[in-house]
Image 1 (cartoon, rainbow, N blue to C red):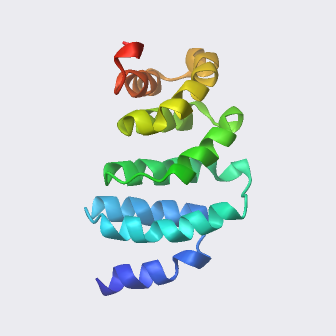
Image 2 (image 1 turned 135 degrees about the vertical axis):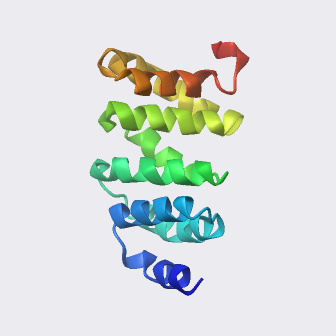
Length: 143
């Protein structure tokens, strides 16, 4: 617990890459509350309007929070604002995680359909299947 508290106390100075690594450690340790507690630092950093270069790290944090059954709209909205800058694998993970949260993210997924269809030919099969699963996961309309 002391190690988790120390890591969280330093989260406000950490880069998005370090925060993504930390979130993945928390998932590996199967601890959910530190991920929740870390999100205050992530949200504060997002208020600074970071550049799209941090998208891969934000997507990793979204995946980790999804694995902990946690939902943070500001992470999804940041990715939604930068859909055109997202790489195929990150876009597939974003769509998959949005599908995990169902109707809360339906409007975000509908915004991602055009971008997903444009990059679909370049996606690796596992990423294509992940995006497909995200789209059909919660809605009978997409089946």
